[in-house]
Amino acid sequence: MAQPAAATKIAFWELELEDAEQTSIVPQPVEPCIHSSGITDIGIFPEPVDARVPVDKADVQPGGKYHSIVKLFILYQDSSTWKTATGWLSQNDVVVTAAHCVLHGDQHATRVRVHAGYSASASGGSSSSSGSQRSVSRIALPAAWSDAGAERADVAFLQLATPLQGATPFKYDTPPPAGISEEEQQQDRLTVAVGYPADVGARAGSPGGEMYGMQIRRERDAEKAKGNALLLTVCSPIIRDHDSVAVGVHVRGGSFNFGAVIGGPFGVDFHVYEDALRMLREDAQPDLVLGPRTDTDREWLIYINVP
Image (cartoon, rainbow, N blue to C red; front, side, top):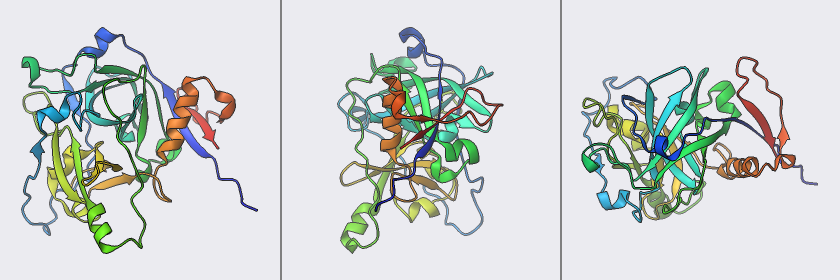
């Protein structure tokens, strides 16, 4: 007799909502959200070549293939300085990003603005497509990250106050297991990381002002790339080049890069978190097993067990 699947322990909290006018404002100043290995040169890598290329402006705008990759502005509690990061739509009301950008130690995000079609150079300053800004109402992430900081669980799911229209969420998949043909393996390993690079525009006070992309080979270049060539991709989707399907989330830069896998025995099951957020939005909590608040120092953090 088959045993029932173990429940997934999820941590979540509610955020302060902003109105449309507040959400449309690009805060200044901002700081980049960077999670690095802290090692940029240990003497075994060739000199780095910056292989990043600007994304075609048309791909960022409504109807473009990267319009669902969004700019995030994040404010932590007891802070007046916003952080900036990259996120991407997995549902029209759910944005995926790296968990460390919204929960780092005892510090957590209390307000998050989402801008689709963002370009700092547009309209002489800072801009995103009209009507493409949203406020985040709720954040859910693995308890393995909130409790232990497990890097493979460094993924967060941001629920928008209202769905983002005019943007097609990314399809996502689990990287294939061993046993597929060599041709399929080669095709699957060729990926592209797309996001708002933290170092570009930083000196001008607008870190990550424009979207860039970079081709990488999964399980090879992502581990051997040197320096800031992949810092841009932190929080960004790792996308299969041949079919534009997301297979991971890039969560650490530096010489030793790391991406959290979608699904599989060692990855994060996106469906569980999307379903949990949907049920919380619909107030369908009888379908969720509410767990206790296990940390008295973080009373804002709520745990649920999802079957």
